[in-house]
Image (cartoon, rainbow, N blue to C red; front, side, top):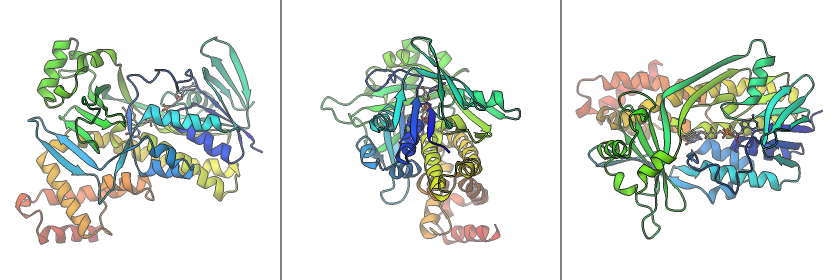
Length: 450
Ligand SMILES: Cc1cc2nc3c(=O)[nH]c(=O)nc-3n(C[C@H](O)[C@H](O)[C@H](O)COP(=O)(O)OP(=O)(O)OC[C@H]3O[C@@H](n4cnc5c(N)ncnc54)[C@H](O)[C@@H]3O)c2cc1C
């Protein structure tokens, strides 16, 4: 019988999972490699703003902590596109008041960790790096990252929520003779920068929007914070003619920013300092299988499916993992021998689907949002979706605002819709007839043929 559970990795997913398990009456030990990051500056220059959307909110609601997270979240109702010439275009994300929410990863992690450490059934141990998991003996070996001392922990069940470079996953890989593993770095790396508040402490740009400077092979985005800052993230190839490797002096940085993001430069007084002080980090997709081993270890969150951030879904997907797991525990009366295989069966195709969608969305965000043909396609889709909401949900809305639809189904439907739009956009008169009846009819006919 499962009573004692060890969760390795106290990131957002490990913390939320621990809370869910403790509320069900399990004793949870939450091991975290880092020192306690709640009061320090461990997140400095890496805090990242997360776009929290409906799938993530559902996981948060189910854990009963919506009120706490609402306090640190800012709604963003659309994309604010900053063109090269300084002009801007606003594109709402969905219908009515549909929004995604900006939260700092540090703030959401700290909030969840505070809630976890207040729970009497959760013991949080910092500076404990999972080194090895002996699944036959149900034993985890951790190393104290400050003293180097080795500790042994016993449990009935283990979860690996230790992120993209998961030690738990590595243990599984070493003990499983047919473990499948793929890791892919995209050419882009990222760096966090900042737009501070104005003199009165107010926002220097529209607060309730996600700002994007799309520039083809690269882009910058900015998300608002409750204190009036915007956290900017520059996504740029690591190497090549236009890349981080070519920005080595303050002059080169200023020239690049003035050329590419001229309207942002006056808003970024510490640009060069931030650029050289903050780390440049890489972006990886990880796919692996199995996620569950010997019914004793399960991977969850980025440990199971690290994805690139261009759909804003990595954490949302991990929160959805937690929610699906809780639903299965309810349905199967906490029979873990049924729940874990079922969790893997349901979530693996969805993890793969959102990984592929996230890569594809990089090209949409960085290149297509500046392309008039793309903008026209979005207008046609939005018009058709408004006329026939039962027949067409734009892919972005399926992923972001339709939490009842699995990622794998959103990907399938999105591919069908894109094939139809390719036909529509190839019509020679599309610029003039896009809002005419014949376009609506052509889409309806194409849908009937599917
Ligand atoms: C630039 C960027 C932007 C992003 N934007 C979004 C977004 O808009 N929306 C969204 O939903 N997601 C976004 N994400 C993804 C999101 O940050 C991750 O999906 C999320 O943090 C995953 O949470 P996690 O708890 O699984 O892993 P992590 O956040 O990586 O946490 C893992 C934890 O495990 C600990 N750990 C690691 N190894 C060990 C070990 N051996 N032993 C013990 N502890 C260990 C780590 O210290 C860490 O605390 C973004 C990511 C990036 C990089």
